[in-house]
Image (spheres, helix red, strand yellow):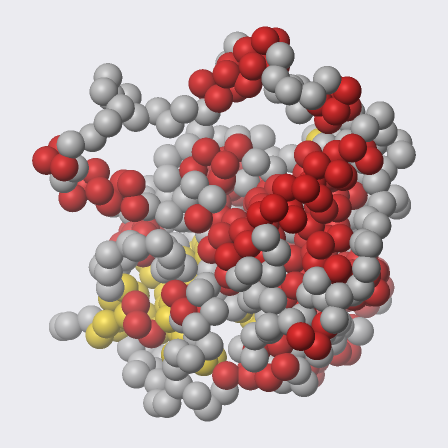
Length: 231
Length: 291
């Protein structure tokens, strides 16, 4: 490279193009401004909290765990997620098929989408930037142990790694093994240690650890209000 | 280069602008590593043809050095673009598979790697509205130009607002069947019972077919030819090859989660022999594994 890429402080071409397209779509009757507002509200409400509760509930309630594995879409209702929202047929990009991947002491799942960034948004929120990168997608399916080690997760050779390449309409959520040292904990206490990264499969839940591993954050020029990366 | 403010104050290319443009463009030239960048028919063998046909989204297993895994704050326009795309799906203008085909494959390698993630989502709206004749290119060009003028002098501290001049008649707009037929059922549940009998059952040994790569597929190249085992018969749905082109007339097919041994996918796999990988494959891409 002969020069650094420009740092953008003005209104960007993307912002201009987005505004132009949205105006034309509304003028042509493709959707309404109210549709856009409603979906924005729905999207801003998405996050990993329901999925953390889903896992904690599966750890504490064997009957729920059975329902969670057999019909996770129905079981999601018990943590307040109706996968048919907000359109009546689900979110267009996430579909309404969820598969829960149950870890065992000798089996560890990790999720990727090598083709794009398929991710269970309605229950887990929007995907992290690294999950969308060609780098993660290229490498996790070929050298998963090395990539997991880069996330700080070192698995013993006795553990089977099962990479789930989420390429079609199913979305996947990892149900980790409940860690030792959490005996007698409430569902709420347990949910706090089930981080987003644990449910993608790049981390394991640990007592005392309630956040994803700290990573560098690329800042936005015009960030969403009340949003910060990693939430 | 891409400061809209300057472009509006000083219309038309200047020498300086042109120089900068050329510098960026030269960096984006495809690296063919050929002295002569025009090909003769007798120079394209099957391996080279296949390399050109490989779909930009299909990156699984490509060699790469360790990267830095970062988080990112979301820009306001990124959320707006995401919502635009989803609302277009909600209202039956496209399915998300059409969006993926346009934004992840049709876009070409330079823009696939060069644009931000949501920049590609946004670009796919341009293409779909043009391809399906909802807008004309003249309308789009004029509108972008006028929004640029509205944007002149603004900064990210005083963002633009969408100001549609009218509200269109929703009733006359051509839409897909899917956005109505899936209501109350979900997708893929709305295709239940349409694919006939499933060809494979749990436990069946299969092989991923080595079909040619033409335009679009969601069957990853790194799986093609690999032996695996059906672990789940999942649902009925149109194949991605049909859904990506809005072929609502085509018959849905069964999908299967197939489990592969890592050692069967990668000759160089150095991990323990029990490591596995699963993916969800549409029936047309599977064949029984002969004993």
